[in-house]
Image (cartoon, rainbow, N blue to C red; front, top):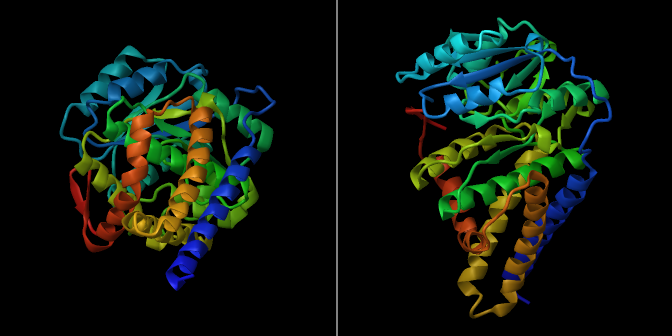
Amino acid sequence: MSYVFIICCFIIGLYCILILMFIIGFNKVKTTAKKNQNNTQFSIIIPFRNEENHLLELLNSVALLQYKTTLFEIILVDDESTDKSVEIIKQFSNNNSAIDLKIISNIRQSNSPKKDAISTAISITKYNWIITTDADCILPITWLSSFSNFINEYDPNMLVAPVSFKSDQSFLHQFQLIDFLSMQGATIGGFGIQHPFMANGANLAYKKEIFLQLDGFNNNNFIASGDDVFLLENFVIHDKTKVLFLKNIKALVITFPTKNWNELIQQRKRWAAKATHFKSTFAKGVGILVFLTNCVIIYTLLIGFFEPSFLFFFVSKFTLDTLLIYKTAKCYHEKIKLTSYLKTLLCYSLFTIFIAATSIMSSFEWKGRNFTK
C-alpha cells in the first residue's frame, strides 16, 4: 500500500468523521419553541448599496410581517447608493406610515462598509434585540414571531437563523443552492455538536447590550467582510451556551443567487478571504480539512481510471455530503435538480480549490468596490 494512499485514507477518514458529526449535530438542534409570546421588541438593521432591483420585494415582505408594528423598528443604512434605492424606500415609507422606518447614511470609519453601517445604526436603535438582514432578501411573514418565541423560550444572547436561495433550474443557480445548503447543514451541525463556527448576516439576531460590551466590530473591522462570523466568535467566547441556532422554516430568509459566474467567484473570494482571521481553532481546522479533502478528490478523479481503489474516496465523501445536503434541503423545503447535483459533484472540488487559491493571491470586488485580503 503506497504512502499516498495512506495519506488520502487519513484525510478522507477525518473528513467523513467530521460530516458524520455534523449529521448527528443537525438532528440534535431543536426545531421549535413551546412558548407563543410575540412580545419581543426588535431593531431591524438593513444596510444597502444600489439595491433598487431588490428593495421593493424586501419592503413588501416587511409590510406583510405578522407582528405588531409597535414592537419593531427598521433602520435602513444607505452606503453611498447612486441608484433609486432611497427613492424606493421613501415611497414605501409614505405608503406604510404605521411602520417605524428610518433611512440613515453610513458613517465610514473602517475598511468594512457593512460593519460601519451596522455600527452606525446600532448607535441610534431603540431596542435591545438587533436583527440584521440584507437588502436583497425576502422575509417570511412569521419571521419576527419565530424569533420572539425562541427568545422567550431559551433566553439566548445571539440567534443564528436559516437562509436559502430563490433559485431557478439553471445550473448556475442550482450550483449555488447546493453549495449553500452544504454550508447551512454544516452550520446547523456545528451548533448541534457545541462548536458553532458559521453564521449568515442575512438572518442574525443578538442583544445590543452584549454587542456593546464586546466592543462591536472593533477587533475585526480591518477585514472587509465577516460582520457575521467574527461577531459570532466574540459571542461564543463570551458565553457559548447563549449562542443558539433557530432551526425553524418559519424563520427562513430567502436571498438571491448571483447572476453570473464572475459575481459568484467574487462573492466566494470575499467569503474565503476572511478564513485566515478566524479565532476559532475548530473553524480553522474545518477549513484546512475541507481544502485538503478537495485536493484528494481532484487527485482521485485524475488517477481513478488507473487506480480504481482511489475512487473509494470520492464515493465516501459524496455519500456523506449528499446525506447532509439532503437533510438540509428537506428541512428548508428546497428541491435540487438531479442532473445539476451530479454536475456539481464533478466540478465542486476544482471550484473550491480555485477560490481558495485566488482569494490568497488577488483582491475581490464587492458592491462596486475593490478590496484586498
